Image 1 (cartoon, helix red, strand yellow):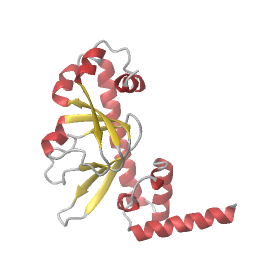
Image 2 (tube, helix red, strand yellow):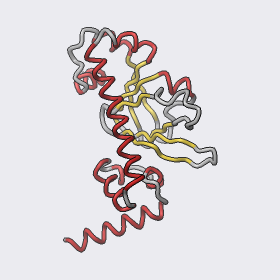
Image 3 (tube, helix red, strand yellow):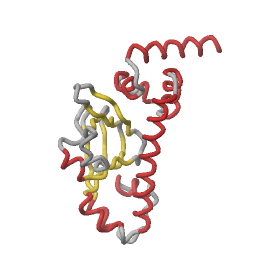
Image 4 (tube, one colour):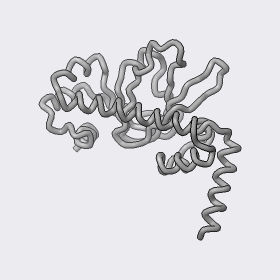
Length: 198
């Protein structure tokens, strides 16, 4: 079973009629650590990517030059649909980079979209991945608006298991809308509290 077969099985698409057609449309891509995911708006809007391994960081750069982490893609089979904010001039374009060695399965949207209408399973998957992406972003924004710094930190540990030990803390701090110093202080506080409970 190759990577395509594993992914399709994971996504529940192993029995769709156009299975071999989708295999021909799929491209396996590897990114080095710190490599940009895409280089321009055209490439960003052209593909749907599924994560096979590694960690990706979605981020935006404000007019001031500040780099803000917007999302992490780290679960097997998690999708990144790059065209979602294309053409929305009031928002900075999202960029993405690999935070670790990363592997992706990519599909060209122009080749894939005409086939979606002929495949109810693919349509359902597409809607599900869009819903998951929006839900994850909504929860994140809600946490930033309503939760304390410690609550945001604890939420991150639960929602993104293992990432605290895998990726640079400056990106986590940015994602949680706090400084790296605040994140470090919260980690020390949590460790002390855990030690006292033992």
